[in-house]
Image (cartoon, rainbow, N blue to C red):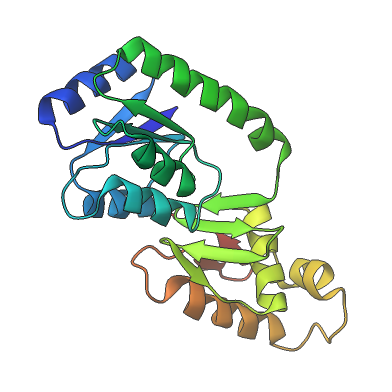
Length: 226
């Protein structure tokens, strides 16, 4: 399990990560909100721990930004602010839990494990969210995000992207794509598949250093960060 911690107190940050790692979690620590948001664009985490009063972008705004593209990953606010108005603000921004400093590390561990237990069944049964690197595909809402930004796709572009994503890195041929996405409703000798792959590349890959849509010459296409 991977946890990303936003905490600008260097001593507390180091102690928290040591404690979590001693309990079999991987813990990365970030000291300001701006760097934190950059970090989650290129890495996947199972839970976020956010202090509120941190440099550049505060923890509540970070929480709200995460929830704009990720509704599921648990978020725990850890803050010295203990007023009910502060807690209300955090839960309004869809944080899952709130722990007031100072707190016992064991209590934090209990809350983390509780949230991850609640999250696990939905993760195992819910196949509506597809993730490839920083690309998130919500099949139910038919929405796509990359790097935290929503990308607008046509219906066929979305169906093609989902098919590539569900192949889990395997190469799919033009023939397979036409069977699953267009159901043979057009001549397979046309370059329609190539055209739509190019449409997707412009929207999904053009503005990002890491390219996700790849061509395997003579075989077809695959979706992967490698």
